[in-house]
Length: 102
Image 1 (spheres, helix red, strand yellow):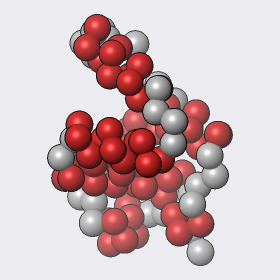
Image 2 (cartoon, rainbow, N blue to C red):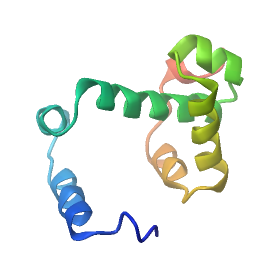
Image 3 (cartoon, rainbow, N blue to C red):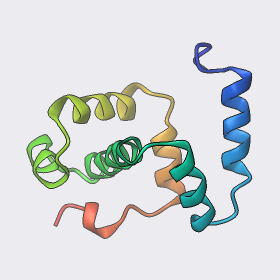
Image 4 (cartoon, rainbow, N blue to C red):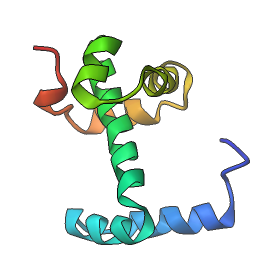
């Protein structure tokens, strides 16, 4: 675990997230917590991860998501050398069809 982010404040924020009951509560909380651009950036990274996991090329991902190759590379590095957070979620949730290679 990264000691730089393991703080009481981060613990409290994660506890808040874990207390959310449904998607509507998530929208309400995250719209107050983050800017629209921050939320869109996070969701873009998640989409990039799903597309990489599904076998899309960097070029295809960049064209479909608008993500920079630097962002795609950063997400790819997390998929390959990170703490398996993306992998954990992809085991629990099905990757949306629109992210899959057709």
